[in-house]
Image (cartoon, rainbow, N blue to C red; front, top):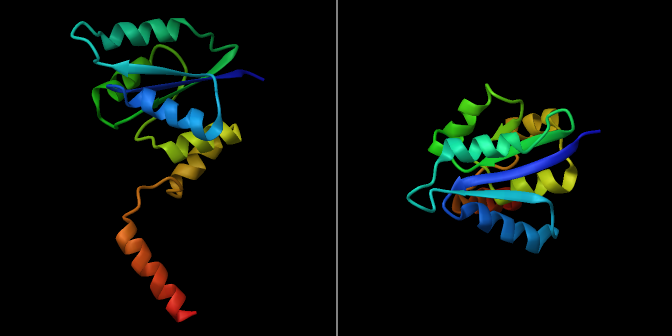
Length: 138
C-alpha cells in the first residue's frame, strides 16, 4: 500500500490556518502546507516543480488540496497534472479535510462524497427555518 502524502496549497496563509485547526481537532498529522504569494519573488511554477520532484508516485499517493477553483494556485496544479500523477481537489473546507484525514479516504470515496455535496456550504438561516418547519410537522 502506498504512503499517502497530503499538501494544502492556498493563497496567503490560509493553508497554515487549515493545518492549525486540523491539529487542534484531529491531532498532529503529516500534512505539508504551501502558502503562496507571501513574498514578491514567489514563483508558483518553481514551487510546484520542487514539490512534485520530492515525491515518488510509485511509493506515495500525493493529494493536493487547493483553496479556489479557477484561482492561480489551483490552475498551477491543473497545469502540473500533465507532468506527474497526483490527486487534486479544490474549494476545500475544514470539514472535508478532517474527514479525509480521519477516514483514509480513497479516490472513489472522495468522488462519491463530493457528488452528494457532503461538505457543501450551508446558509444556516434557511437551514434552521426548514428544520423548525419539519419539527412542527412531526
